[in-house]
Image (cartoon, rainbow, N blue to C red; front, side):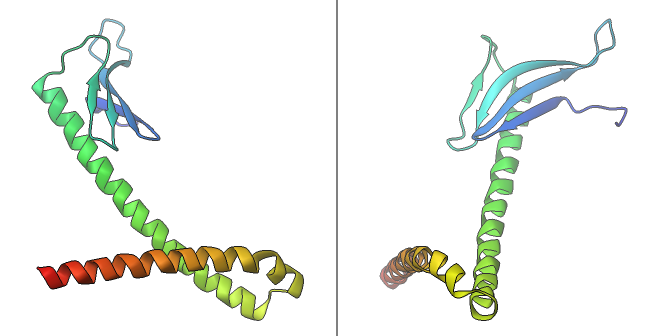
Length: 136
């Protein structure tokens, strides 16, 4: 562990994080973490905790963390989609080369419906983008 700790710690959770102020300047020389706020990544809301008023420095740190976290989650989302493309390709290869009749029977209907649904959404969204591009 490095000798200098950050001023803030964020305990991530599904929709954001609990934000703590890290304090090592106490008489016991222990690490104290004081929860100061809840940060919601989905709606960008920062709620002070325990009747606290957040300083400008606190708000800057929380806002910066929020923006960075939203960027990380957006990148992960795109990466997950690209991994799905890889899985679809691997599934096609498996179906062509290794899948037994029983295995294919077990997955074909589910795969076809999911792929049909995905295709419908993608085609509709692409058409919407093309139509809005024509208007611009």
